[in-house]
Each structure stands twice: as C-alpha cells, then as structure tokens.
Image (cartoon, rainbow, N blue to C red; front, top):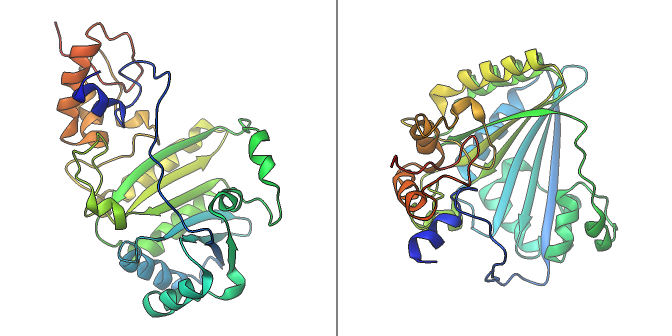
Length: 301
C-alpha cells in the first residue's frame, strides 16, 4: 500500500479504507504481574488530604519506572462525595512493587492487601471490575450496555494542576452530581521514547497525563455543565492548540464541512501530522468516500 498509506492507517482514524486483516507484533510480559486498587471516598469540605495526594500523583506518575501504570478515576457519589480510585498495574511481583512505591510514591499508602498477583490476561478482568475468581471465559460473553447516554471530552496536561484549582474542580464535580466521572491516564515511560511523527498519534514526550471527562446523563441541558467544566480547565491544560484524544470523539471541537473546518479539530487530534494525513487522503481517496464528521478531508480538486 505504500509507506505513507501504512503510516496513516495506524492512528489516522477511519478515513483511508476498510482494513480486512492485519498482523501485530507481540511483546513479552512476565508470567506474574500485579494489579492493585486503592480507594478514597471524600465528602465535600474534607478534601485537603486528597488534594495533596492528587497533586503528588501528578508530580510522580510520569516519572515512575515504565513497567508501572497508575490510573486515577474520580466519580461523584451520593451524599455530595467523590470516590477517588487509583488503579495500577506492575509488570512484576508485588513485593518488588511495594518496595518501589514506598520509595517513590509513599503518599499513596499502597499495601499488600491492595495487590492481586495474576497472569496478564487475568488483569483484564480486574480492570473491568470483575470480582476475583471470575472465569476468563467470561471475556467471550461480554454485553455492551448502551442504555445510558453520555458525553465525553478530553484534555492533555503538561504541568501539574495547582492545588487551589483541584479544590475548585472537586466542588464543580459535586455540583454536577452523580454521573460525572473523570479519568486521568498517565503518560511518560515508553511514550517518551517514540517520536510524535512515528505514527499519526502525536501526543508523546512531555505530557504528564490525559484527562477524560465523562458525563452520564439523559438530560441534554446538563451537558452544558460539562462544557462549562471544560472551559474552567482551559488555563491548566495544553495550549496552542488545546489538544484532544481522537478516540474520545468530541464534536464540540469541530466537524468536517467539506474540509472547511477540518484544520481546527485536525490540529487538536494530530498536531503537525494533520497535513501529512491530508496528503495521504488526497492520494488514496480523492473522492472522500470514507468520511465521517471528523474524518480527514482530501485537498480540493
């Protein structure tokens, strides 16, 4: 298919054709890995300790050894409280993990009781909140629950968000109520070793974490409160452009109207790679057969 076309389909979105088959290169993982989960439930007015912890998470999460991954998820619960969950995985055994964490991130307070040692494939069950002991066969019979509509937005963070801003963020989340979730996924590690032009996905070195704003609601009027929260975060995330993650599709940042507005969302999703994607699209699909609201447009004929 040519080098450019092959480059474009590995991260450029559904704009270049239909892929019928592919090959992947596997990587080795240890026979035993460790999954862990630490939960904190904080009520309004008692947030100082969790704010300090989240601020520290921002400082260290992208500098930990690259075989440690710690996701932070925040969800609004009843009685004006927020549950903070630190999901983690380490490519090794728990005693080594605990030693590293005690040295580099003791503030989390990780303990042996928080850890589960298993094979890598078994950890996929824990990430999906399945109870310990669930059969791997259940992975073959998963049902997608589409009964709850939701709105998603995203941001990239380069420098830690100040504590005062975090405190205000907790208040705004509580005001939005049950259904408001934020997921912060760390970068660093292997991500820092890959050029931003290696594939169309450009968000590599220098990023601390990715934010996913996730609001379950059946009331379209409430979506506006999520947009206001997104506006509140603007000074504390990536700038010029304010970047976004393609797979958290957000039509608020622009839609494709015969290519007229594509450079706006194109820069947010792909940065400098957008121009190369347009050239590839023009070559392989000049009539724009493969298109959607945010697909890559061809150049005008």
